[in-house]
Amino acid sequence: MSIVGKKKILVLHGPNLNLLGKREKDIYGTFTLQALNEIIHREAEKISVTVECFQSNQEGTLIELIHESEGKYQGIIINPGAYTHYSIALRDALAGVEIPAIEVHLSNIHAREEFRRTSIISPVVLGQICGLGPQSYLLAMRALAGEYDIGIPLSTSFFPGPKTVRGIRGAIDVAANNKKEILEATTELLQKIIDENVVAREDISAVIFTLTRDLNAVFPAEAARQLGWTDVPLFCSVEVDVPGALPRCIRVLMLVYTSRKSQNVKHQYLKGATALREDIVTTEEVTS
Image (cartoon, rainbow, N blue to C red; front, side):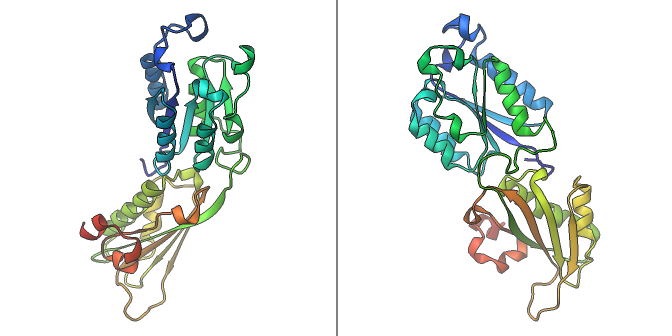
């Protein structure tokens, strides 16, 4: 994921969508699932979004993919197929993850048989787009990517779901008070926080940097500006000397607008700063 906030979206095709091009062509058209996925990927490239597409006829497989999506994706587009009308388990899976989702359908389900006009999925997703063929998917993707900017970001509390500002902490040390090294270390730390917490740039409220007195405090903010964060408030300060403190240390507090619970936030301590929070450092980070 890019440091400037490239979003990753999961596209789930439900039962019988593997039969596109064969099944009820008068309703679903003649394009295949492979062709649909190609259309989705081409559109994703245009709007700088990463997408991964999966199809399954198994309810349990779709549920597992939704469960595993947390921490990996920033949005879900789902065509539940026939599960739209009766799968409480699929509904509960979507309601149980903290990722915005949009329900899509190729056909207009409200103009078809009576039993197809009810969706038990709609109440737990941001919205439903139907009846527009492949465009249903593309419009959903653009909405999740924030392409339709009307002054109300998709991630705000205008939409259902508990949202709040949470602080993500991190630290990294450097070998010397060298501008190049400080810029590189700051970039590495910010990238790690972004990647591990799946944060989009537009969801960053502010970033607070604190540095030990043996470092130049203006360099981390310069690194953030070089990354294109021109509209993110940045605050820099020098720490009070504390006996025994880790020398040449850069600390970060990133304030992020998110629906993640506090226990799901992944703080990042890299290089020598792992000694500051050994309880949340992985074996890979300790040995790297």
